[in-house]
Image 1 (spheres, rainbow, N blue to C red):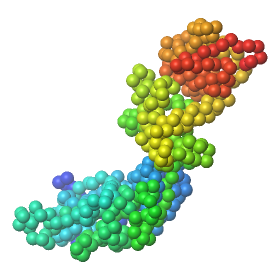
Image 2: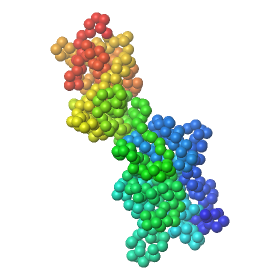
Image 3: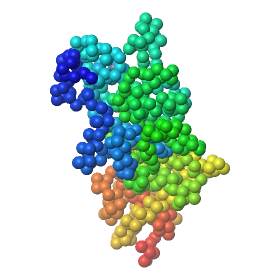
Image 4: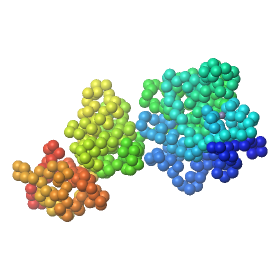
Length: 487
Ligand SMILES: [Zn+2]
């Protein structure tokens, strides 16, 4: 351990610095877990959520905080797409955004607690040691049956030996991914897929933060890493391939699907391509959000829906995200920013694009996959329309209905309203239509395409809930004359 009294002169980008002075003091000499414990305790006092990037999951967040305070590695267990990786990154975000490290060190050593030979030697023997800032560390270590100990722990550089270095020279050892996670988070993605011989090496790593190579040589590095791991039980039949002694060293926390529709939607909106690219929330009206997110959720609801019982591997939040993405893209291709029902595709093919590949069905139902999607979508549409219909005021309904009819074109004794942008200027002329639209859209500054989408969902909800008033064919609604007392 290097102390102020025995330290060499440290330089940062060429300038001498006092690493024990305020601007630098926080960024070295501390253990990874200490930064995390501090953040957790601070947040408990202030009563704030320290994992804002994880939507919902209140219970899981409590368990994670507790496990971290006890310095236990965590194993996130759950199906793909429910945010195990997001959670591990949220934990890494408790670490400082940057740290001071010895420049050139392959495992970004702490200037006061060097781990590798090369840094130890340099700090002992040199008068000046150059430092650098390193960004926050989160290293993914993918579980792969082909993973080698060289990739995981490290190995000897034959190149360096050819160049004439001795075997025990510091330059000769090349650290693997687990060692590169030094001073940050090492995320073992699919721990069960790590070959069992390597899992044995990990016992020691998780407990002692030190490793031994397959040949039995101790790698004399003391690594300061927070270990997190994930496992997807759906990948395995029977027993989990994670070895018992390794499981014994970790706290298992289940990560399931979002609990509520609102959370499902929030995850979907945050992660669309549009949102991640532009930083803005995409303009998907709430009814489309609900229809699409519900379709995914119904596919997981085996109790309520017979069709869901045919699904063996359920669609995750990625399905919701991609549904939002694809429907937005389809709208964009038609020159709109707000989707319409027609953007689901003539045969719901845009919805199927996001869903069909993301679910697996029982043997014998493989060719019924699309049919299952159609049915679940229909249920989701029905439910959403019911809620919209219940919000329609009955007070001026007759006036509203007549105004809608006045905007249509005559067709076989009825008035046809085709859902197109050209319809909007006509609709806007009627105060009563504007009132109904505002009540449903919950948006004052309505752009034309959003306005049209609102009118469309009102018509669609009338079609579902008052079928004698409205008929539909090829995205055109037909409104008959209202008989007395019918409204
Ligand atoms: Zn080093």
